[in-house]
Image 1 (cartoon, rainbow, N blue to C red):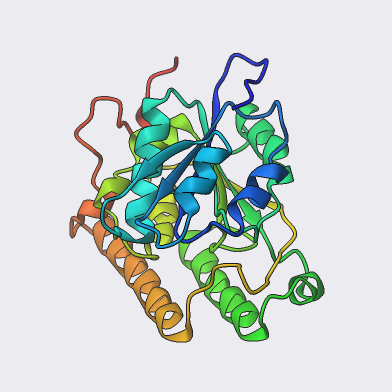
Image 2: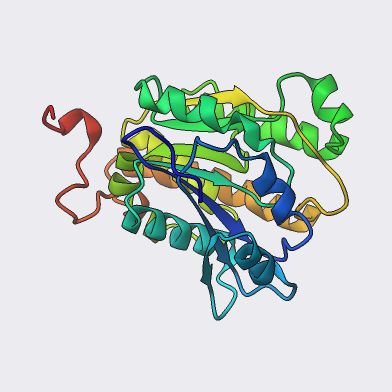
Length: 264
């Protein structure tokens, strides 16, 4: 892919499942010169996602079995680190998120303002609904985000974004391999970020809802919300002394809590 002029390396990762009809449009939106590589991890799709990714010249990793959304992200981050990424941007390849925001997101990370940056689809209610977000999903997103902010001490516009950017250290420190392979991976990951002292922020990103955009049904959304709240129970229990693997540092020597790390 396009190689940027800066010395740091930015890798875009896309956890893909049946994204053949939207992958190319998502890639086309990526601002050239602001990333070094795109890694598509295909979770055993039944369509031509792999063929499209290869035709576009992207790095392709294939799962022989479907590992789930969280399992897909684990592979994404493993390969991004192995490929020398300093900054990792995860974008759902369903064209729901405007990838043009990538340079601004990475710039915020480069300047040390944040360690983790989310794309916020809900700058205003009117914009979110005008972009096609179903009202039920809007109010569920807002309600759960308010609860998550209160429990975590954060002030994010939304916790449930498919556009996320991280500096390398976040992925080196977090024990995300212990997280679920399902959708709650996202919530577990962010609670871990808070626990290990990383700085979280967000940037506005236009929302696009349409037939091909991925979305989970009501039953799975409810399960996701309940598992998210369970994650907070586990976190609070851990802080009270009841150890939980999700919040125990990795055994790697580089996995040191940020405020305990020596100055570089």
